[in-house]
Length: 170
Image (cartoon, rainbow, N blue to C red; front, side, top):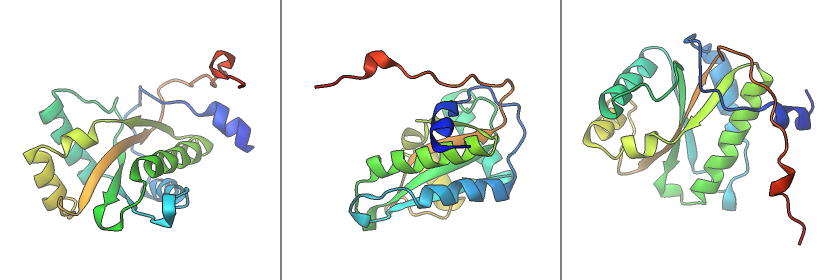
């Protein structure tokens, strides 16, 4: 698929069928994030794949703290993690990395949705314990910024249509 086609076919999936994405496919998707632009060349982001049992533990924590399955039935998660010791423009860099993951997943026929649950969840006592004990990431050094869900869409998603109203020429 050409780059423009990929951009327009990219959609956020909010209804996954519950199948887990193979680990090798998740590694391919995470690898794409590592080649995204990084402000000042800091490369301060780490991409943590939650697969199998670790993903289920995380989703149980989400259900406990949020009161619902905020991941729309997805069973594969990649966390975007900032290494505070490296500095950098982490919020912008996270967006670039997530977009690379979206486009790669789309090209592979895998559904994806970025969810803004992780940052708040990992500020809680339970979240920091999970981060330290399950992910082996010291909360004093590493900040979980975002979580992205991967899986297979229950229904085929229609391509995006450009919104000409949002384009201005100065």
